Image (cartoon, rainbow, N blue to C red; front, side, top):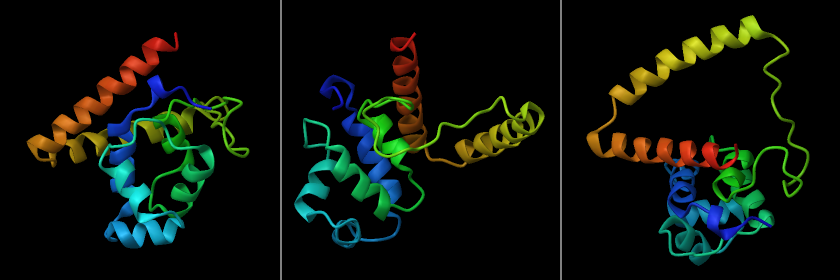
Length: 141
């Protein structure tokens, strides 16, 4: 199971907000087949321990635009980790380096434009998320 020290409640809550889309929290919890109370505890960052993989799978299945890998990463499970749920293949960027470089370049330009369109509060949240990712990357070296 994931180490609770690697569990980022804030990141998990942000992923839930994105996965919820325009639905209410109650409808989102129904679509995920989990209790509304459980969903709200996670969304309001009130749960100290990371949710179990079975619960995360249910949430990912009911989410819009958020992958199981994203939720698993937020609880501290890295791609390729034996604790992962199912067989989610890791992307192999070495397969086609030219195509991947073009995709990354286009993606970076779009990302910058999206970032510029955010409010100051939203930019701070993105910056906080980037710092979280940076610290996770440094821990894994």
